[in-house]
Length: 402
Image 1 (cartoon, helix red, strand yellow):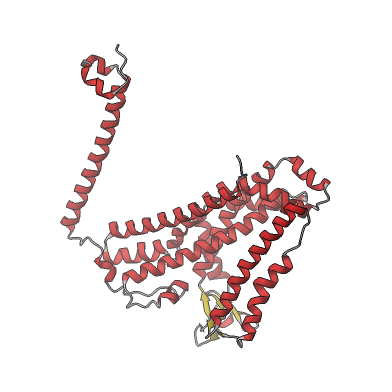
Image 2: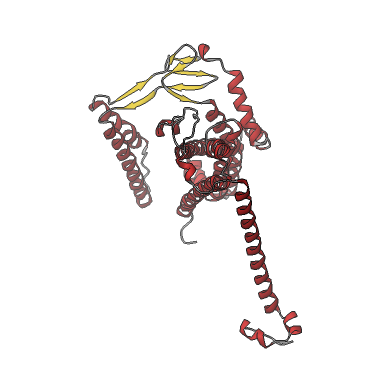
């Protein structure tokens, strides 16, 4: 058998030689695979067009300009877009995206905090704390997330009182089976300066943190920055707020004939969904944190104790920074899973992307391909954005020079 190094020489081979030639077989398999894939796509698209024409379904995106004809649960998205039944389907899309972002964002923050605490507690020397953390992980990790969403939702509907018997905290916060009612902040003229003072405080606190870190690396002198941080982030905005004459008012919830009116309503669908996603995802984050801490060499902890660091200081300054390098990659995957699992909100009617736009609007206009393509594209963009951001964080935390 001849040895052939270039595909251009294959034309000089006989049919029998082509059959036993590795390069020829590889080329044939690649061409056949591409041809099969294109053929399948052609058949699918052709059948799709024929079925659409046969059923008289209008294709395109003109449905986005049509009237929605339905209302959405009062939440952040509908507040920002000023939604009503006369709003367009495109505005439904915007509201659904905002609600999805809010749910995913809050869920990521809560699951991270809870997962970090449970992961540390999992390795506690206290037997009771360690067993409770382990029981939490085994319990919530092994129950399907959809069942947890339904469980928390029914807890809100059945365990909490009706609006007339709302649980009240100083007549400012009310809790009942229709949600949480909080004071609704309404910024007045000049409040933008308070917000700018808050941003300046955060930037200044980060700068000071880096400055004292460089000083510590150069001299070994440790400076407690908690006071500086609190002063810049909290005290500075408060002083600006008071100097401007308190440019912020609140709209408080008031009990009406059948329900509470006014205030900021946090619907039970959002609370149940966010709580379920946070509790479920925190189990996996906790295991990632635990494995990261266990990956830190025991000698690191002994060295920290040898130079006089307390257990808390050792955990904060030595163990966790190294553990996070191991824990971040699997945690990124859990953030992506949480974001995509938010589509299960359709089970309880929370108006996120899949429920409001991929459900209600789809049922009304019947253009499944366009709507589901838009929904998939949004989830893809969100997931890629989270992945890029956290991969950047992971790269920054990686040990330099390796």
